[in-house]
Length: 171
Image (cartoon, rainbow, N blue to C red):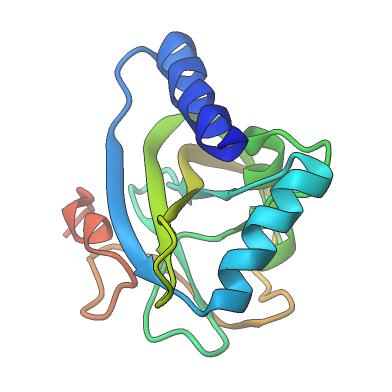
């Protein structure tokens, strides 16, 4: 499948650019419609996945967002648009989500989310790249679909994925 070759190439490209890459893989249950949309979007536009940033301020705090319908906090991010690199996606997503302009410094993690519906189809990869970034401007303001924002100096109890609990934050 072309999508799998694309994701394998993505992993190789990030490893070549950044050296060691923290690769996180997990299965995500989804409805057949979501599965189909992922595959169709890739086939039509060559776009898959998304990106976001772990924006860390001078005091070591990390910027977290809470989205409508979500059960916890997460680093701000979004799906890629056609023609957009993962880095461009991450910087745009932080600006649109939080009002903060961020500059990507490094890669934090590459998440391979294997979308798995209840049919007997093989799961398909949906990559999400999380970058380390520094704020360079803007003012904190929740964007569309965001219910809350915070500069966290400790890990909140309810985060959307466990790797966020591993962040070193100031106490």
